[in-house]
Length: 266
Image (cartoon, rainbow, N blue to C red; front, side, top):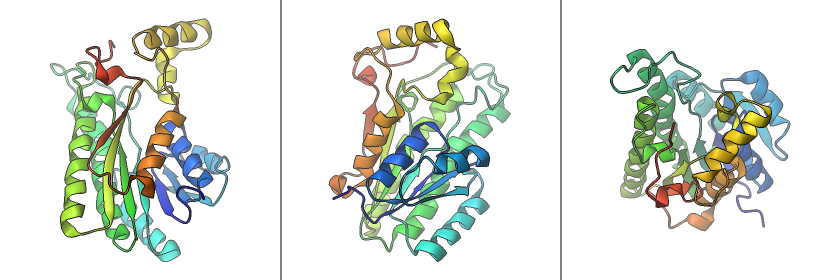
């Protein structure tokens, strides 16, 4: 039997990368999946890549009115929500002007990163809880980062936002348990996952391959991860297989955080 058969799932930041891989796997395992993103052209194209019951809806996770709108839509069409994958996020390097170090920090950039990475997750949890009360068993999975567990001097806004996601996840998990809601909440902390976010940094051709080889050399498993690696972790936490698991942080990083070389060199 498929692992999330009959469940209704919402995935944010689902137009590409980790979000798209999670959406594909959830649909493959029997869920009805609502993909959401701010890149509507890419999102609508990605919907065609998801085999099974799926649809695409626009969602800027930093805007509460858009969360309210998609929540109303889900209630009207499906009547409930069983799985939320709060995946949408930005590093700030491509989306803001910076600087991103703690001494020269640009506050507009800081706020923009937090609006997406932290406010987006907080709002996602807020509306998920309201919709999930009628589910038999529901799961919120927040995508944080290894950067939420270690200091990143060159990306303080990103690291700060992802650290806050980690802690908010635990608060949500305990709150839902205290209220007697059938909702679990856990975070995933990917590290060195080869997604489109890396493209601008890695370049193309031989320089790209050399850069990937250099990054992999510092990873205990000696290889960069794939979006599918994170998707399988999300599937486990979204499924009833993890019904006794809440408030945890699951690292998907090839062993980086197990050792002393936890912070990226750049």
